[in-house]
Image (cartoon, rainbow, N blue to C red; front, side, top):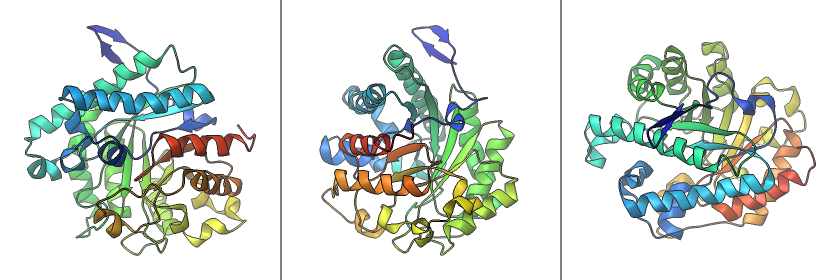
Length: 331
């Protein structure tokens, strides 16, 4: 349910996510890197929700999302529309100079914004547009400095999850998570709030989570300790070359952990997370090459149906990715 111009409109998918029924779904790319480096729009502390109150920032967000939504309309695909909530949680309050009340308001404003955007696009996009709120990890997503317990993670993420539960959001995604225990805690919080949640891990250049755990073990652990609560898993903020060696094998269809992955959001750059953090210019990689790499991954994992980008990627990359996937004639 969303509110536009004082009226209530319905159409959320919280109880029946359409991407679980197949069909191709796109997401956007690397929103922060695109706006900062390509559009010259500064983003305070890399937190995109800080753009919403500013007229120029809000307009930049709308232009950004409209490009991806137009691509989905052109290609007749569904779309998962991400809110700007990745860093809108208590850990970043001091860096952002925001109070907890202001961060709560930012979460609500972000969902209202994407709900209004979905309403605006309803006459253009024939396939479903799903409203998703991204939960970022507590601390540095690329260099976790401490091991968080399941209970600590549940208690921490419960605050933001409860804010979001009262909005029009359809689902949550725990994005760029580096520890399986934190993913489990976030999922417990989502379960209590009756919100569906996906989990997206990131890996280093060696294919392992920053903690040293394998992706397969992380997925298996999360599923084992939550009774398979995650609606699906994803990988984000890693270049395809950094994916685990398992992804080059032909027997992925026989691996339960691999079958649980539905989406990939890859970096355009082959740089490590540390190199990206220290980079003063954008490395956009090669959009055509990235599209072909997505197609190769999809050929081994034909159950994948959610495709987006991460750091360094923009509409050019998603266009090539979509064309490459659709050229397989599987959708």
